[in-house]
Image 1 (cartoon, rainbow, N blue to C red):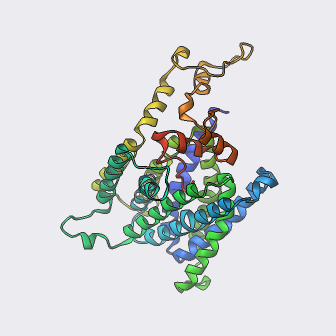
Image 2 (image 1 turned 30 degrees about the vertical axis):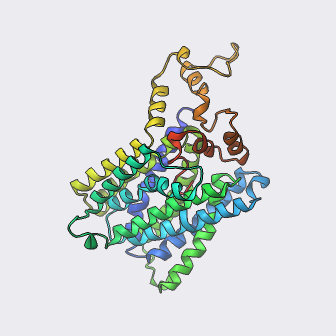
Length: 379
């Protein structure tokens, strides 16, 4: 079961997050976009707060520092609220696939903002090259015409792009806040803030509950984005982070567009241009360039079956029989500082004491620095 659990988490997170773009597109025919996402967070907040209350101790559930409050605000306002508000509005003008591909740029924008806002985060040469490649990829998806740049910046794609930038900004601000709460608890407190903010934006835009057509499709879409693509998907993603670390969990960003493309084609009759497909592949290449050191190290660990090739800092007692592959995982180099590492570095110790083990990877491993913890909730 322990070996299958990461696979189950990955499948659930990728499928549910990918389906968000299809459900958002379908539901907007009956529910105004900002009100749609506000109601989504109303329901998701109740579910996730209930889950956090049942699975977290009272001490861990209550924010204790200014950093905790700052992290919750950053998640609620930027990483979740504004990001999803712009996404749902923009999704009304683009296909599910294009919306998912553009939103998958969150791990590409994060290093740019981190280099400006975080003193200990600087964009490396590989990070700069990967970012440029990723931006070229999104230009292909959007279909920017170099001879008509002003005409290219209009439309729903630009709005979705603003949502991706907001999500990246929120994740960097969370990192800057140096919170002590877990990602699950932080998101549970952030969701009510997102809901209140979006209800205010909806009212300002002139949307009202009277405009909703409560058709079976509308109800199904709302339940899906609230419960399945909201609370359950976040729980699965957080579990994936704890099991396999941030680099591999970030692959959900690149599986979700595939799910959105297939779902949009099967349920909504949408299609995707060949240039958009090439653009998405280019974005993936940019991400791989940025995290090439960690991806290479991960690949070596996965294919290694020789115990002697990996130094063991904490030998396993002979009385305990553990498979060779699992022993290799438990003997990871200290410099990688993955969530279950026992690294003695100061930054890793600080991250572990804060209850955010994924931060150890950000602070101690250059390859993971620019993508660690940048998940859908900004974590």
